[in-house]
Amino acid sequence: MTTVGQPRDLRRLLVIPGAAWLVFFCVLPFCFMLVMSFWTSNMYGTKAIWTLDNYRKIFTDPIYSKVLLSTLQTSAVTTVLSLFLAYPVAWFLARQKGYRKSVFLLMIFLPFWSSYVIRTFVWLPILGRTGLINQTLLTIGIIDQPIDWLIYNTGATYVGLVYVYMLYMLLPIYLSLDKLDMRLVDAASDLGAGPFQIFRRIVLPLSAPGILSGCVMVFLLDCGAFVTPQILGGPSALMYGNLIAAQFMDGSNWALGAALSVVLIVIIMTLMFLVSRKVGLRSIVAPAAH
Image 1 (cartoon, rainbow, N blue to C red):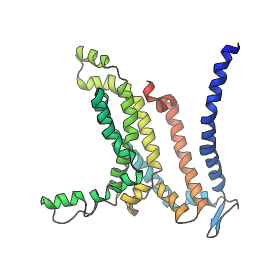
Image 2: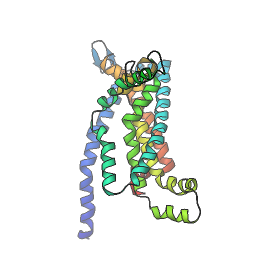
Image 3: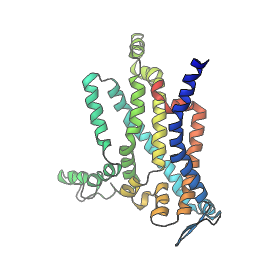
Image 4: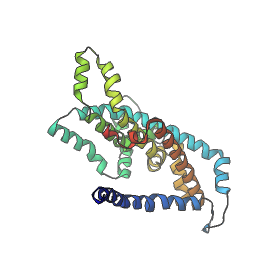
């Protein structure tokens, strides 16, 4: 009995560090933010004066609901774009062998070792009025004057968010495809199945856990993004994360910022719950195991 119980006790002990990390860095900050969302902020600071005015303002002022819906739409579009761009790359990487695979993986991962802010700023000299695209079009004579609509709009935000977060889509899909048994593909081909049938009936279902995991991660990250919309999108592409950041950095209204954050977290948790109920939590967090 002692021999059987020891591994179980050891597994329980190994859970303690991870559980403590989640409690101290996730649960407790959220609880504090939830409490602060019912406080009152003014020009002199935030005080523990209980009120529902923060939530009343969020649900009655149309600007907040408008920006929230716009953020969800932008996040959904960015997720779909990331999926269509990442899947062919993931398939290509999964089919490589040995040294070639290592080289291609290094080439893809290398830019993501730099700062998130740097990877966002790099698009300014590309999309800007005096940027690479405008200068190239002017040089070859396609346009007579620089194009202004390449930047500081929703389209530029799409470009930046896709570039910044596409790795979170690429990696889980690659892990799923890398585990794919190619003997299934060869057998289907020998039986007369075409490329589209093979993809639809074999490759796509087996890579679905990776697709789902990547879509969830990218969508969640996009919902909270504020640096990329601020740098590339400008005022016309305001996202929910910009509203939250403004309350903490510019408006000094920490209580309202906390309430905005709580609303976003509740929406995200609700979406995660619905997805996990539909497909199972394991399909989201462990795509490589399938």
